[in-house]
Length: 172
Image (cartoon, rainbow, N blue to C red):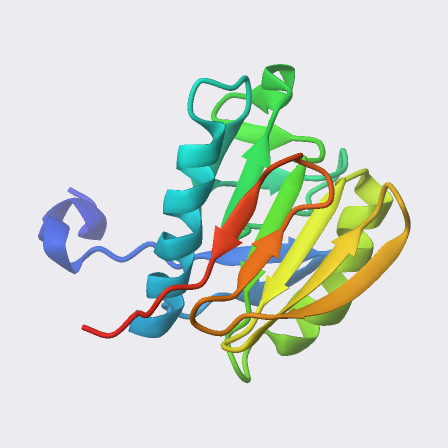
């Protein structure tokens, strides 16, 4: 019997990682605040896309932007082309990719590396969400902007007409 088979299920841990340009980046467990923001945005995305042909997914989900070994795991994504879903993985560019920036571990990847990778792959829109702002790339119009992300503020998609995400209080 293998060691894995002897290990109780609750002790088994799957280490998440991303591979970008052949380099593997180990992903640490997200913080409570990080997950609060992901859930807040995800709930609103799911409401907007309800009864529409696009699907919203939260990490972990494997995304292969190109036909190579590279794999990213965005915090949130929207996929409108079902043919890109192959064997439970996304093969090609999602329509919207959202990363919640984890300081300091993912700042460079989320704000510099992934946006350019997503642009090259054909992602239409990319958001990097920080505690108090959102950097938004609209690749179809080749624009980038920074919008506030404070309680009560609203972030509007440039690609999906009528998609608005409101920042509400995450106090417990």
